[in-house]
Image (cartoon, rainbow, N blue to C red; front, side):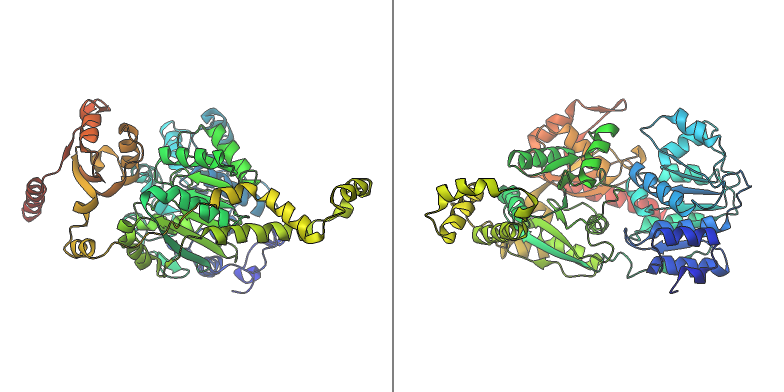
Length: 554
């Protein structure tokens, strides 16, 4: 499909697309529109963020709307408030020439009474987050009995955030006859389960390979020791003077620590995590979009649904627990045909994780040396000289200052003046990097590789614990990590593999913190239930596995 005109769209929609300078459909838009031009059906669309997914599902919905129908015609669910607002704004732009077409956005953290009032105006489209949508159904303020379209946007993210029960509840209040469009960047097994349960013979539309990262993103990893992780981050930032980046951490405590250190070092950085109120979050995001903040230090959960263009870098200060989450992180750069960079800072014991990510990414992640002091100084100097070259003195009336300049520097030649300017500008940089050493670490071999081949990786770095919380307690891996970090007094304890079962979990924590971890959990309650953390014995783990297998045989 070379043009939107081939999709048999209403003139009002074509006019809106023209205003937005959308002339040729993106690949995912072309596939969806080509399908719905002839017939309606359930659909799974796999595409990265930033590929035009919102228009892909909004256009066919708007093309079937009857402005005189005052029932809710379409429900669009998204994982976060930010994404819901973005979708609502995009639908508004696409429908601005269609009279009497209204859409309402509902989400937590805002006045529910105002949203209920907006629903009384009979919108044809509702965009919402799962939690607030469920709440409005419970209050009998949101009637979905006439919905003809359901869109699950970033469905993999909604599932990873623990919204499965909310989705089940919402879909149980919708008619059997409806068109379901499921949009996702990755295709984990949970998406298949949702598809099998709620979609009827869905057509699968894929742009690129399943679970594949964006094509125009270059992936690199940098190997350093744990004690040098922050210094390595600084060098990556210093190497790119015009950087506009998200730095991803694993925990809220780590984001706060890293952002505070960067700010003290003079970087234009701020933090985005779940401890912020909605007004604080909005303030940070507005500053970041306006580039008043150039480095945003965030957790995966806090960064969900962010729509920020022109990011030059994504930096993984620590890798996520789930491989698919890396695809979401790296997909935030390299959008709209631009090149992007995704960096990973790892320790020698984490190299195996790179191989796992490469498998699902379908790309090589290139090992790259951490920049040396001389390379960073050279990069900063080139950037400064480029700025100096492009400066336009004619914009300011500087002639009156020339006598003073000649009196001060008339005896110096141009080279001497430039050296003085550079020395003054880079005095702090020169001082910092004067004694800076090599931060690159060597991969650990021999004994570690031998242990790894024997399947004993966990014994080398982590202690494995039994925790009496499982999936029936409505915990996911990420929420369990947040709980552990909230309870542990030390906030930078490394967390290894997590195995979640129905009524309990096994979790790996960095060795050396055994007494502290067990003591921290000893007198802790969750929802009236006492938590129990104990070192997992191999014999106990095997018995539990045999017990589960026995149940399956019966």
